[in-house]
Length: 595
Image (tube, rainbow, N blue to C red):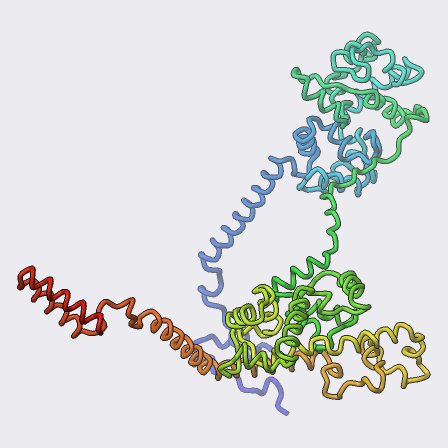
């Protein structure tokens, strides 16, 4: 293998570089290659990028200064002076705001932890640098983990120390005894003039102390009673008042600063947070009644009976138990409880809900129609259809025709006829066929069987229907299924009966029958309209014939020739003398008599 020194060097002269400065990279030694220096355009940043960087730095500095100015303007800069200004603006005084919002006890002299401090700032709406402010207060407190009023307002704390020390030394009972010695016009409150006069009279301010009594009085006045607010609003001079509880602050301050014991009645616990306001609870809405349920069904399905057929009793058994009634209520969109409704319906229906108990008006109309069919048509409903409702054999009857024919031919009221048509027309097409009219006969055909089965189930022992060891007796866990399976052997329904199917199967069957009916109506509507048009034309022709036919009493001249002859006679009479005219008239009368 060739050594490093034996490798050929690059042709330096050909490239124009000095052969001492050119080195081959990776070969080591003095001939190792180094990259050439960068051009001037790439060795320094363009001026436009440099100016943009400087502008961005100025923009950040400006935004930061604006934020600091905004925080300082509102007292949110994180300094103690800003917090004092904020409390003065919100509570009228910094000490009053500290006692009412930040201090954890009722009096406002307790030590404040970080959690209490942050909670108080949040409560008063302080949106500034809370941690910076807390650090400033802890530095004022000598690095302690808690701060107090003396750290927040050290100058004011010295004034309170001087005044409280003299008051406790002058009165053995403390502030409570001093309050009894104060002369005031009101029994329970004192204004600033009375407070100042009492302090000066008792010489409670030491000579070397500089106590600002107005500020002390404002710090004491933190009463939140309604009477206090009324007094402040009534005081037009802005003096304000304090109560005995406010004045006892001196005892608590002396206890905190000097260890002076408190009386048992003056010992207070932590501040009780007021319960936040919440809107009053809405009164409980009463459960809808059966009449409300019927009104709901009438608004959605025209009548409760039609809702019973379309959505509640899909299987057409005539009577249903509570589970199926609940499913029907959910199907129609009823969003309330159904148990009370079912109990009310079952109380009048033999323990089950029936169409008769849900819509007694429609049931009464069906009974009236069955009675008329039994008396007038021998109980044959086909005779009613062919003779009264559809004599032209078109296969269907409209709403107006049904109501008019039933009202005229059968003597029923129009309202009852409308109820009948609504319960028969389940798809709302406005026409019914002969097969739909059969519902009048079979609507309650299974009702007695259902009621007897339900009665036997109620009387039978529960073990017959809920036995685990006898699967033949417990055919289903559904109460309605068990009800259907409890029929006597002679009363068993056919396998194809709706009673053996489910609600889903019957819903599909309903949809198929409605589709078939729409197809039938579309095919038969032309024949029906043609038949009704022919009947209307014949009726109008008969009426016109009666109005326009010729009668001897109604027509003056029976024929045109008679009108001509009478006119000729009148002309001849005018041309003859009077004597001849009278003779001619007499002859004409004789001819008429003979004729």
